[in-house]
Image (cartoon, rainbow, N blue to C red; front, side, top):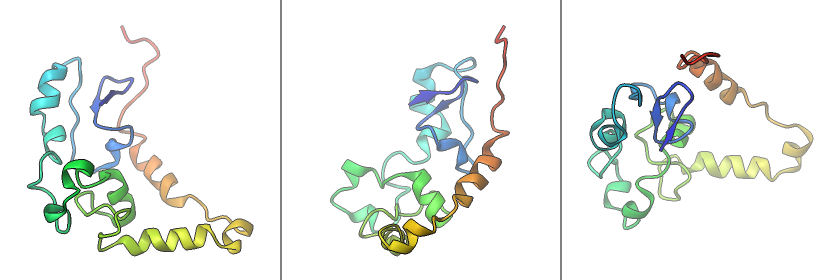
Length: 134
């Protein structure tokens, strides 16, 4: 859990990129309420939201279905099985990225970080910086 400069409480630093999640502010709610009751922290808690193969995986209580931001960035769906998992239907995306990263072509011709730049542009209006918080 982290609190950004605007007071929003997030489960991780990148969570604001997940569409449809609204994050509570510590100026309006207690941390206890946010952690236990807010919809943003409840959305991916437990196992009911998990798709297969996560739902029946022996590791689900250790990895909690993986990273939601990573799943969103690689598959376009925050509720998808994290492609970093070898059981994920989209694991081929990670395998292809590793092959490319380890090839000589990747070293001589770096791939631009267009998807990261696009996410930054989408997220830049999610919170504003105030020079004087009074």
